[in-house]
Image (cartoon, rainbow, N blue to C red):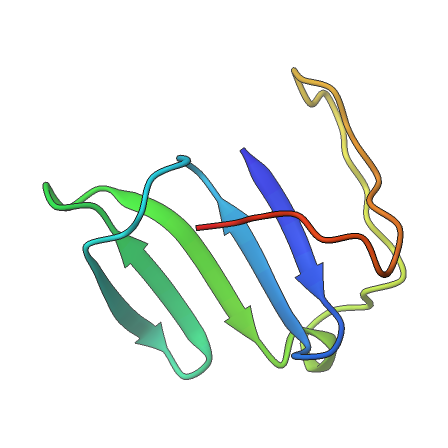
Length: 79
């Protein structure tokens, strides 16, 4: 699972599965669910994220994996 904030687009993306989505569905204005071919949610995009949350603060509790901070200017591929 990856969580990425794209400051230039003010978009937060939560990648649940590292696969290319087959379709997308806007569940609510500015909230897009990326779906697999068989209907699973593989990613969640929140547009204009800074209007909904303080993007300077991220709390991660009981996360089972490693947490990696990506500095501004570094690029990471997301689906």
